[in-house]
Length: 324
Length: 169
Image 1 (cartoon, each protein chain N blue to C red):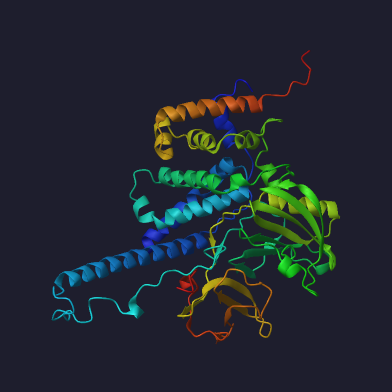
Image 2: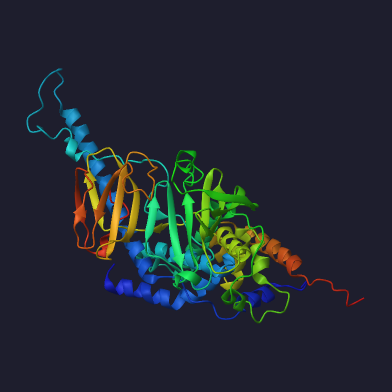
């Protein structure tokens, strides 16, 4: 191919067969675009409000009588400063992934036939997506991809939780070829030897796992986990909005969201977890933090939090910033 | 967005999507990732559509967004993932290369180029954009486009050179 010229490159670029089915979702393009425009409008409005408040404050200072201790000038009473209720609150942040409701996980390759489960686990400390090919349990391919925020460990690696009696977190590990930012390990869950996984660092000090079951032989499954891991994007920006907002004066931040199924009705249910630190054990229902749950029938369980919780009916209006 | 303007955007996507997908695939060498890039680029385009639709060349505007999305993604995260060994891609990806002479794998050859060089080749030879148009899209000098094109073609010539099997001896 030493005669490769511009015409040949042009031909090569236009050559090829049918493209696979498109994964581009126009409805999501529009929904995400609308949300971004709304956020931008809100930010512009807030900026304008801040300018107006600043000018008002400056004018009030300029008009204030010169004598110390003198009262406010006539006509400016109550307008020189905003009341605490009007003061814009700074965004609270508990560490880990921020924003919590933005998926970093962006798979670059998945086994044929699997689909993403609608259940979501997104936490400041970690986020996870599950996949299934929908077959019966025995022959199913089911796995999850989990990304841990820098500084947070899988529970079975964390000495604080792994050694807890009855935790059921024991795994056996063996070295795997290096991947990403450092060493990688194969592992098998002791309580369920059919569940295997690959652990690696997607960035220095930041861990990720691909874990699950598949009907193939162990070597084949390992190759599959590895292929998923190699092609995994970790800088996705997929927004996962929720249908409720929580306004509270409590010194907490959003640290987690669970979207699952109400065990009683089978309908979709969303739980927001609010706490003052990033790490809240995801599977724990009684761990630290407040849990605000929106049930399928629209009822809200505030989990003991003093807050004003508002359900958002229209899906287009759902938000990724539910604790403003 | 008013209905007519929104419909215009939908129509644009409907007619241009195959080309955008193919371009993204050529840029990143993977249909799935390519679709993600297109998804994000179209979201960017939607947000700015009122301005874009008044541009002289709407297609060039959106292609520019697409290429910048790709370059930006390379810079931010994907480059951190080191590919050590590769399993064959699914049949859909292989099908995309049907019709090429045996031994020629454009995707691999492109994959070995730096992202900016890949972007130059896609804009120049997939979209048939001129040197000046490509320079404007990539916000660089025309001379840079020319030198990047020459360097990329040279690298591809080396990569796509047939393996000497000894049959000519």
